[in-house]
Image (cartoon, rainbow over all chains, first blue to last red; front, side, top):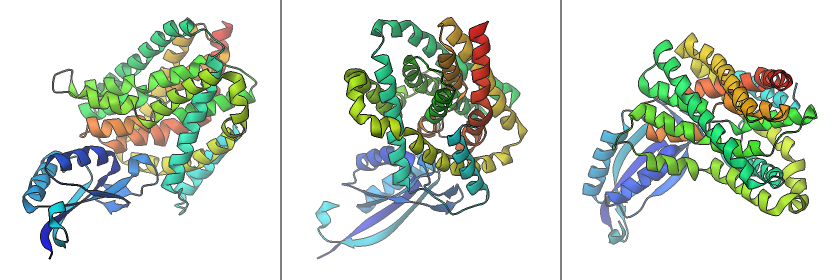
Length: 99
Length: 310
């Protein structure tokens, strides 16, 4: 009844939201979910107190191949200069054709 | 001291003492929308008193000012400061662009001195927001086919601040002084109170930014105080050429001296990823913003009196 997919989670600066959303879709994802986030890491404290310190968490459920190509693109484009964390896990979804 | 500036100092104290005071992001968003719209509306109503054609020449002079400031700042940052190209370009963009809140505090200062100013100044505020950001991208990336100005230009022009300021201007211009009357209680009477709240929040944020700046040595600290003085002199010169009143001169000098910390950071983050935002924000928000509020505005006002009198 369920289908195995990848859940790709990206935590990054909120300035990137629009650009990342467009890119994720261009790589073949069928959608994504964004939530506001805050936290602390190598890029300093991101306390979301005002615009430039805002953070988001973007979650993408997609096929493994799509997740891999998105991950490769993000690694190449953003890892060097942006506060960005990326991780993947397996999820079992209902209605696999949606993802 | 201007009352709203005291709220800013309260925020700075809260930040330095590491108070857990924090504005909900949605509230910060909401009051910044309010301030932008209110400033636009007031300017629009003022503008309705003048023929539109009289705006064109002054606008061109002010656009030239918006281009000149980042071009003057860049070599100072790059060669005197030894900053890398991306950082120098990004900081230059911040200093060429403007801070709406600094403008609002200067307007409040003028009201307290009983000095009026031309409605045109709100148009200048809008005009000065974008050019420096585009110049900054050009300085960082060079002028070539590979440089994507389109998305940056769209981001700046359709971004929240220019859209609301310009939108407010148009609405104010269309509805005129009589139309604004029923909206007055919200957009005019409450303005200073909301500005005080906003400055409290900015004080908290500025305290954190100036802490980050300490890691980068004395050059940026000096730059963040000397650059606004140079820019203010350019602003006064341009204002003198345009024959502005004392109020107008003060505001144009303040606009020139102010540094962006909302539109420029967002645009530079996308267009010039290798520039370190801690440097530009530390300087513009951590040093220049408080400097202008406390020392700059009264100073530019005194200078405007001299320029206008002599």
